[in-house]
Amino acid sequence: MTDAAPAAAVSPNNPCPFLRALVANGYVGGHIVPLSTIAETIDLASGETGASKIKVWLETYGVALTANGNPLRSFISGAVLDELRNGPLDKHGAGSRILDVDAHVHEDEIIRLASFGKDRPNGAGGVERGLDAKEIETYMAANLARAGDAARFYYPILMKGEWPVLLRIMGKGSGDDRYLSVDEVRTLFVERRFPDRIVARLPKP
Image 1 (cartoon, rainbow, N blue to C red):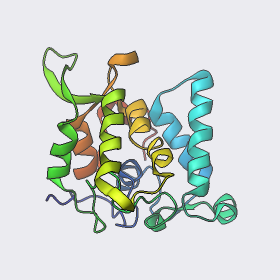
Image 2 (image 1 turned 90 degrees about the horizontal axis):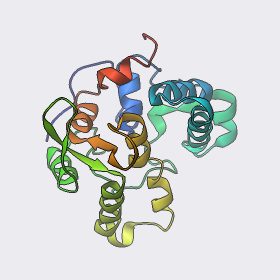
Image 3 (image 1 turned 90 degrees about the vertical axis):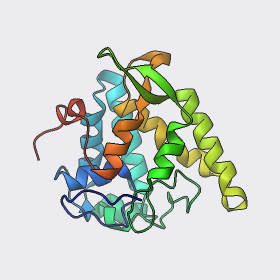
């Protein structure tokens, strides 16, 4: 088990690794954040343009609107990032289990994630372990199977807004060759830090 590196305080009740990194690095606050701020920040991080950019913004806004279980309050005041755990998007152990309820990172679960991928050219003359879209689907299905009766019928829908979105934002390569780097996932969880190419898309905090 590995504890996250020291950074700006992030509540254990914010279980989303991407949001945790945004908070830790000062891109958004750790408590109440306007929905438009969340949507715009993740939109910028995605690097999308045109219609795809609008789609990312709308999808992010919609997820943030429902994340605390009170859409009206969230619409008026914003999402409460340190109250996301046990909300409607929490899968209660049916997900990756990389981050536990005390915000400790479990290295064995990152190793398990890596076992679903394969080594890929990293564009710099070397190779790195990563998962493409199909391998991520297999991984998510295995997580549901591991949860057994604790899994709910709507969990697969929730999962579509997690690892596949992370692949879209942080993935390397394009098309069917696009993959999510396990090393970068480890850095995101453990150090709450983004790859340089993502940082370059975001305004300085």
